[in-house]
Structure formats: structure tokens, C-alpha cells
Length: 158
Image (tube, rainbow, N blue to C red; front, side):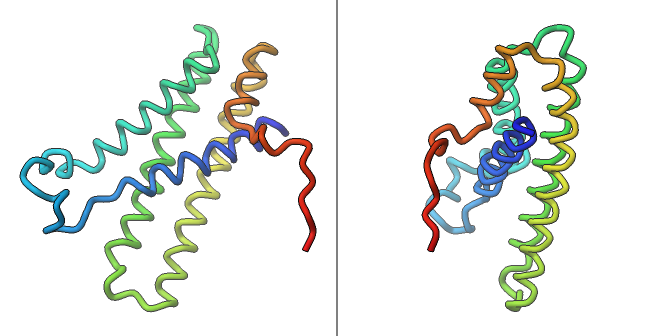
């Protein structure tokens, strides 16, 4: 259960990073000639961020050669989830100028559903990997994905 909640937490953090990789409006200072190549390929920017995250997790979790095939499935799921989230966010952004309040709520629903579907897929893939991990790897995974700063604190009721 810890693994699943850890993956969920990681996905929220990761999803937020993907959601923030948007292009600046045309005519803005960031849209000048010097940054055209960086803006011309937002998919490459997203892909680089995804790959960096995957590489960091691979290192943090000390994935062994025996775990590599399971890890590859986790990594592929992360890539697919990032692409799907980017598409859902892009669809909302493309329609933002003419969207009604209902359209906007429906777009958020689509983003939330895409996120939920991605978490479910990632949890399944990561669960198999997690079950093959050593105790030290599990501890590293728990720390990487967990909200350790919140343990032991009571949440005040309102």
C-alpha cells in the first residue's frame, strides 16, 4: 500500500511539472528570436524533463540488471502518462479563448481523469517492480515518493 501511495504522490509532483511546461504567448519577450529553437519543440522539452525524472529515479532506486525489464515498463508508463497529460492540458489551452465556464470545468475533468488513469497504470507497473526490490531499495522508494515531512503530525479538524 505504501508503494501505491508513493507512486500517487510522485505522479502529482510529476504531473505538476509537466503542466507547467507551456509555451509563452507570441510577442512576449521569451518568444524572441533567441528562444525560437527552445519553443519550437515543446514536446522535446517535456520529453527531456520526463527522461531526467526517469534517470533520477533509476539512480535513486538503484535498479539492478535483474529489475531492468520491470523498470522499463515503469519508465514507458511514465512517458505515456506525461504525453497524455500534455495532450489534455494542451487541448484545454487551445480552447481557452472561447471556453465557457462549463467548457473549462469539463476540460479540468478530462485532465483529472487522464491523471487518474495514469496513476492507475503507473501504480500497477510500479507495484510489480516494488515487490522485486530489496529492503534498501524499498526504503529508497518510500523516501523518494513519500511525504516524510508530514508523518506524525495531526491534521486539525475545522
